[in-house]
Length: 281
Ligand SMILES: C[S@@+](CC[C@H](N)C(=O)[O-])C[C@H]1O[C@@H](n2cnc3c(N)ncnc32)[C@H](O)[C@@H]1O
Image 1 (tube, rainbow, N blue to C red):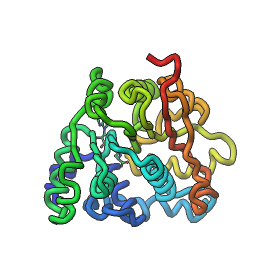
Image 2: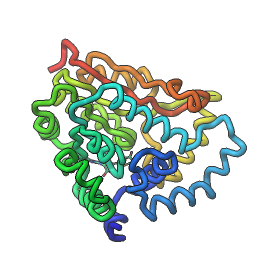
Image 3: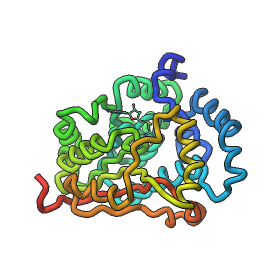
Image 4: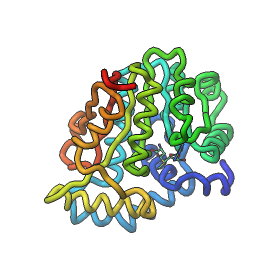
């Protein structure tokens, strides 16, 4: 187990989502279950998700996070990358999973999170898992909003032919300006190769807005108010942000890909951006 101090330093929502991935049965997710994640999940279930018994038309946090995680995962499955770089990886179980399947996987985060993740892995992984990821899973401390990030990412991607750069549950915490700044850095570093995957949350009006109001309340509860601000005005504006960053094609991974998730309105789309626009650079 990581020490209590290390656990406290990790963004609390990373604990929560790690526990949701465990509940959903994703491979290797149980490795990243923490006491804080379990307590947050069950505390929230009792305190907040009861709301959903009178709003069955609204997606639950678990359903929203399931769409998000499956959508990101589907891009790795479909693209078969030679390297994945996950930005703000938190307690993601994806690095261990794909590294153990032979893919070079780089998890980027702030120093405290990288240390905590390494400690969890050192303490909880068995010898078979450690051998299966040896030399393929890397942890790198970088500020993804820093001035030198495009260059730093470019160095991580050197020699890659089909890289996937992804950032799950991160863009929504940033200001709209910083989302665009990060997208520009990634477009520059990819230089037309592979794909960039990230989700953008949007404002909704009318009945959809009401249904999503319940989920937004849930997000505020889970994130202590940090995760529900500055949404994009529409999916089209969100898509345009990736095009403006320099990508040539931007497509959503639609929730309808998973029939059990298709009946709910969802506040975000996971976008896959590829290529380099003629005007970029
Ligand atoms: C809400 S957590 C999401 C973690 C994980 N991707 C998930 O879906 O649960 C946001 C993550 O981004 C990291 N992060 C925030 N700002 C960052 C920055 N400027 N550079 C690198 N990582 C950052 C945090 O440390 C944290 O691990």
